Image 1: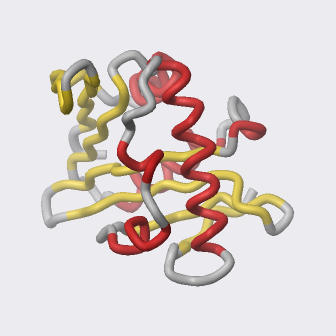
Image 2: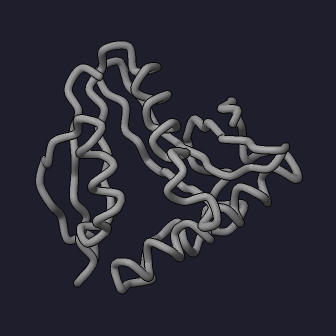
Length: 151
């Protein structure tokens, strides 16, 4: 697996990233029993408009995972972590998060995921993230927030 910088602006990679994002968030929607996850319904133009930095996990020249984040001088906010459903449980998500944590250079790293997304929560907790509260973002859709100080 090769982890490399990517951008949704190029073709065909933008379309591949959008398809990967939809497939990954469809899995989360099934886990949490709610398909109102905003990135699940994004268009390619909306995806490209996000002010995010991206890394992709490539296997045999195929995009099998990606992570996106925003950063400030003091914090890195993991915005998205997506792994192709056929590639789950192979360490791809873990490797992508660890790479962003390494690039955080001592800054706090934060992430949010569906409160009922046990696999994602377990991943973040195993990487040293600690619970930092919960938010109901729309009626009935809850996020669990995590922070990892000085990654």
